Picture 1: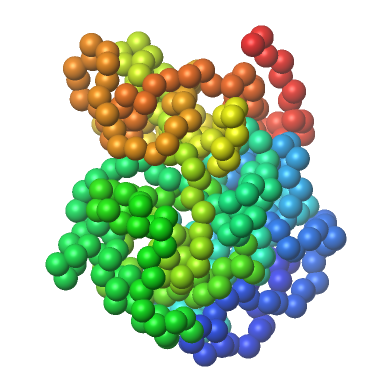
Picture 2: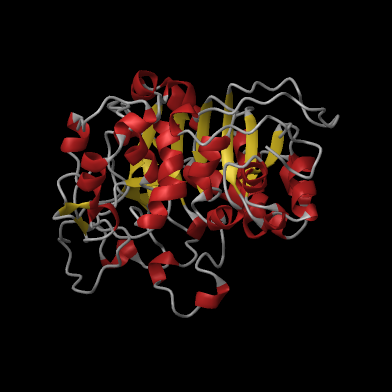
Length: 427
């Protein structure tokens, strides 16, 4: 973990030979920490997020939001090579939180001979997320996107039955079907089935031969009915119980993806790694939801079909559904689609100022049809015919708080981070 700042830890551990079965958690000796850092923080559990200069304000607003929700774990901010985070960005992050450290994963792995420079350059993207999970020395990791908007401390996932049983919690993506990614045709089969059947299990210290667990056999991915399976905006993993999944994941992201892409971005890496490693993993029992896109006038035009940002309920089968988070850049950033796309992006992905509804919690399934009179086209983000239910009453005030953090940082009014703003609701 080698960063040109003082709040980091030693990168001096000796290089290891490139043996997949030996790869796993990297243990490092602590280095001298700056006095502002809270050295008493546990290194057993942590939040990991990936940032570059362009998303630091959103990322720091999430750091503050997590603290307001009661999470006091170590937060590791990962990036790829020094130029991804300027000195000003580093200083802003380190000054704002006493339990935050910055990790230049690409420099570290190149210096230690585990990646070539030209390969490491290919991780300046979504792909840094699984690389960060592989690299971190933390045992219990909550890997999250900086545009996640939480209603509760995500550490609650570690108390759920699925996580306690498997050391994992994954969330589903929409059921989108095409002959792409892991569902593309390879050797008269799908890429996923070819990977499973031809994988060199023994090279990773695993028993020879493919084993298809029941949950994988029943999945839309395995049944060739989807080319997207996982939404990786939040991934919970206990690395101490991962078996060879981390080693397999490293191979997937540093070798196999350059031969043939199996995923749109990083998102399918996690469950595929566990499946190849013959390690049990847990998906939420619920499919994804989406929130209303107020700019798209969902509730006016087709109130049974919402088209906004992905949302996820707690992955438990309690009688009362509890919304955990929204992966929602469009509810935070006035230009979520980027300035270069203004005027061309569809209405449902534009800034979403006043969402009030969410798709009800339900089992994962493909899109249906709308029972409304709407006869127009639906963007791919929509869940068609899934219905709508009001967002919980605490959603709007917590979203307002997060927006205050984000805009305060953007406007260099850092005193906006001094309070957790307990807004009252009328609901």
